[in-house]
Figure 1 (cartoon, one colour):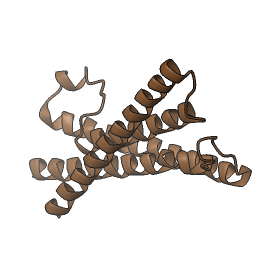
Figure 2: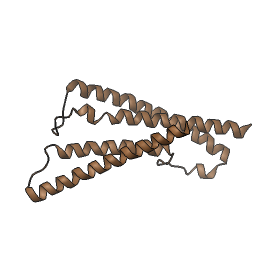
Figure 3: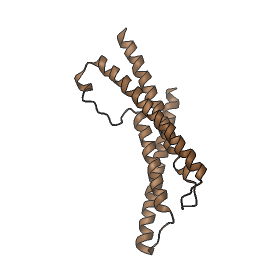
Figure 4: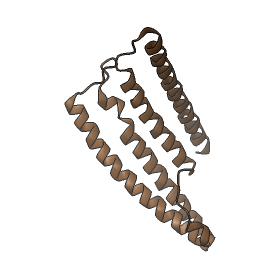
Length: 161
């Protein structure tokens, strides 16, 4: 199981770095074409914005995997280790339900975009394909928060008895 997680982690990191490199290449290409030839890639800016959304959601998935996301933990520093675990369980479950809600809302958004059949001007890529990362990202993050909550719950049970 641990080997599978490491393999998935590596694939996620490679995909994130690849998207980041692709985004950088497009930005530099746009910059070069605009400043040298007074032109640019048609729809290139829109494509870059959508690549940015992919990078953000993939990075958010990685930070939730490593439990290194942004936290407000002022109270956590003041309580005992037992209460730290309890607060972590509560916040992870709360985060899971928020991400699950956002997953549902974003699925509705994707479905609407699919029905409209709107495309971006960069090779007429359907918009719903460019934003499919939104529900996928929320689902991955939600499942990781759920896994973290259960891991904390098991840790709590082990330390309690």
